Image (cartoon, rainbow, N blue to C red; front, side, top):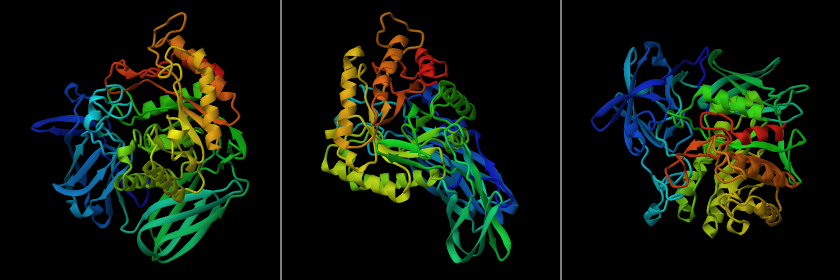
Length: 557
C-alpha cells in the first residue's frame, strides 16, 4: 500500500485533530492521532467500543475522481461509516487500511466520517490481547489487564487519517528491487486494466513502457556508478512514475529507494559486502498522554538519541511502526528489523484460521515496507511457545509466506525458550534470542550468570548451525536510584549487567548483533513487578539518559 501523496493528479487532506468521541451517551472531544487511554482519566483502563466522528467538506470537483479514506492504524478493530453507511471493516493494529468512499459521498457538501473502534481484549487476536479461560487469573506477571505481552493495550485511532484522491485508474503499488551494480527493477500494479504507457525516471535516466489492457507493468533502469545506501550514509534515489492514457497524464507518483545489499554469509551479516554488527535497541511506540500515537517531535528526538549514543539499528518491537518512522530511518542511515505483531503466541493459537490471518498480516507488512532500504530483516514473532508439531508447521508456513513476498531479506523470529523448545527455528535464516540472566534468571547475580549466558549462546548456535542476534538483554533501573554495591533496580546494576553481558555477546564470532532492552521506559499493564512502567529503558519515558546510556555511548564510540 502506497503512502498518500499530493501532486498534479492526487489531492490529499489530513483529518488529524479533534474528533467527537462517544461511549454510550457520553460525547466529548478527543485528539487524533493518539491512544484514548491517557487523554482522560476515566478512559485509562477502558477496553471496549467507542465511536469517533468528524465532518469533512468534499469539493464538487472530486466527483470524477476515486476517493479513498486511509487510516494508518486503529487499535484494534474498526468499522468505518460515511454518512451513516458502512464502507469497510478492519481487524488488527499497527498496519494501515483504506476504504474507497466516492460512491458514499455528497460532493460540494460536508460529509460525516464515523469509526466504531473496538479495543476489547480478544484472546484470539494477533497479538492475543488477553489470556484465555483459567489463564486469565495469572496474566503476564499477574498483570491487570491480563494481557499476554509486556506493554499496555492502548486503544484508539493511533496514526494519521487521510482523505486522498486519484484518477479512476491509478498506480496502486510499486515494488523496487536493486543490486549494487546499479540495476533497478521495478514492478507496478494499477487499480484496473489500462491501455497507454508508463514513463519512469531516475535522475537523468528514463524508460517508456507500453501497456496494452494490463493492470501491471515492469521495467528496469540502469544507474552508472550507483551511490550505495549505508549506515550513516543514507544515499536515496527517487523513482518517478507517470501513467498516461490516450496521451493524457492520469496519475503520477514518486517512490524513493536506496541501493544496498544485505545478506548472511558464514554466520556474518554483510551490508554491501562488508561485515557489520548491529548495535541498538528494542523500542516501543510509547509516550506520555499520546500512548502509541504517532508524533513527529518524538520521532526526531528518538533518532537524535540513537545517533548520540552510537546505535546503528533498532527492532520495531513488537509490531510494525508508523511508515514515517521507517522513512526517517531511510533518511538517517539507521538499520531496522521489521517485526510483526505476533507476540505472545502459544499452543492454542496454532490453528488454520489464525495461520491464515497471520500470513495475511505478513503480506500486508512486507507490501507496505518493501521499498525501505533501512529495513534489512523481517522478524515474524516475539517470544512464542513453539514446542508442538502444530507450532512447527505454523512457523514453517509463516517463513514460506515471507520468503515468497521477499527473496532478498533475511527472515527470523525472536526466541526466549531453549533450542529444543523452538520447533520452527530450523526454517529461519538466523536466530534472535531474548535472555535475561541476572534479572528473571538468577536475579541479582550478574557475575555468576555470565558463563550461563555464554553457554546459552553457544547452544543456540550449535543446535541451529546459524548465526545469532541477541535481541533483548538488560535490567530495570529506576532513574535516580543508586546503590553501592550495585543492586537490582539501581542505575548501577543496569549499567553493570548491560556492560558485562555485552562483552560476552561481542566475544562470539557467530553473533551478528546485540540490542539492549530497551531504548526508553514504557507503559505496561499493572503488576507487582512493574513500577507503573517497564523501566528497562536506558532513557526514561521522557527521554532523559540514565547511567547506562552514558556507558553505552562510550562503549559504542
